[in-house]
Length: 319
Image 1: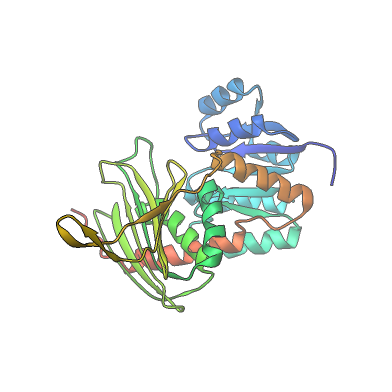
Image 2: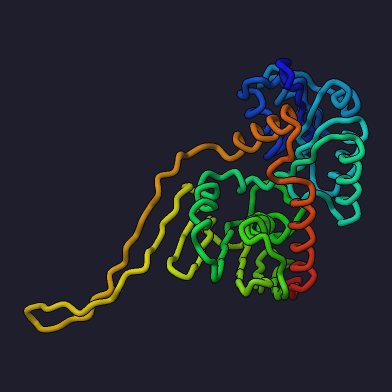
């Protein structure tokens, strides 16, 4: 592993990409070489803020070891393939590409050129998810319910709620179960600005996922029913509540015998960290140690294929 800093750049410095720039600027062992964006004024503003350069994409690719790609989904492929063919590692914001064939070509090109693809499924790096994975090592999952709801975004979004929001929970469910769905049912409305999906896995686990851009309250929750417990994870405050099984009993009170069934709630201590910083730190570390990223190109393709099926099966209306 080289002692030289890893040279990085960011392509697309809009609402998400500018946070990539901020985090790279803070990471030790990283040299922020420059940024590129179709909006010259936006690129110049971000470059000034973080004391770096604006470059055209070919010049940026030539000068770096790795890039984050945070351009709109339709441009993922053409941007990423340029980097991969030049031997540059890429972190692509989700979804990995606009089509399955594009995603497969990106993965094949990365393998051919000996570089990594990491896909930006940021919730994998939420410390609450990391804690949940350890908790579930001792549990048998029965069902999973996920809600990712919120009001219409202020920024322009090119993907519907399934590809923009639900894909996070699809990736989490697939990683937790390491299983494939035997059946997929879904429904959506308002051009899939609101959608729900029910997945039945080979193991028998049922997962119900809901995503919305029409709900006037921001909700990011994952609930898991196991044989013995009920576990509720809140992505926003990075917390987990575990409702333990308790034995019912009859107790003697002044008014006579009464039935009691107390709930035992445990809240594990979780060290709050910024998921994006953990994600980019691991991306850089995977390059320096030549190890497979936690969220590989294959993981990104797997999630993309499932949300595509969910989207195609949903009942879309144009009201």
